[in-house]
Length: 376
Image 1 (cartoon, rainbow, N blue to C red):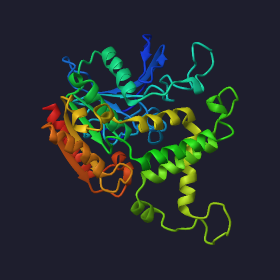
Image 2: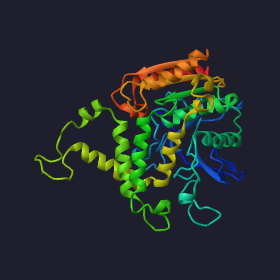
Image 3: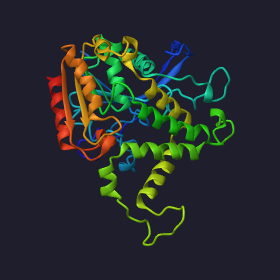
Image 4: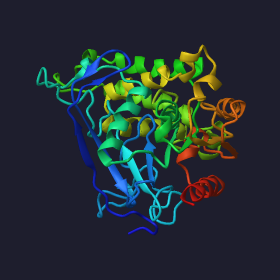
């Protein structure tokens, strides 16, 4: 077993039969959420931390699911969570959840619609970050957790942490908002729309009902992931890792794979298309686009955040041009304006938006120090 690992883990499932009314007005009659837990919930149930996942994330946050293939089945934030790690599972009870609309066991477009007996497909309603918070709150109720010691996430997960603090102020003591933003810029919405169009125009998409056609829009999903992956990396990182290196020694003067960066992107696109659901990708990017807690307060972010009672940790990364430090500072400035408790760090990193997933000594030291403060 790897050092400081939570070890072999298994997913759990919670079913909720009470209908969930979504922000759009649509209703999900019943649903399941798949989740994993690490560590032990204390007697007071005061040491629980919720991990919210990003666009293509899921409930498997730490540990591994196959002892024969440990490296291949490690959780997506395993470097952050475990005994002796920044989120120390000897002190905290950590919960990772796959969101409603996901494709890793929670009810989503690929799940059977009880009204038809077929996969939901295009009939699965659009969900928002607010809807996820309500669904997750029901899971907290099921686990007997009245208030989270912290809600934490990166990117879209950080947006969920922010929404939790606004919508459930009495149930969040700390919110860790990492590599996130108070809302998307027009450029980010544009990237998402191009990615969606790649899927929507794939002949194998069939209006979202490709399950019945026994196919999948792999080409569209592949292109969407390739585009997204470009935005997750920094120019410096791509230059250092790939530069203008050729796949082979000579130029072919054609449209095949010639540069190393082309090979890398196609590999990432193919891998992603093999395991992710296209309808879930559409839902997740739309939830990103719709996220704007200040919309209800005429664009006044400080007014939107005034309801929060949590203390905040906000972290950004210098080379993250998709969710730049300037976007994080808007959150920080709004909290400071309200006199709310916030700690902020901008981390020098070459990994772009993906920095929040990486092992970085300064970044991990900051999270560790903050979590030790919570534990104390």
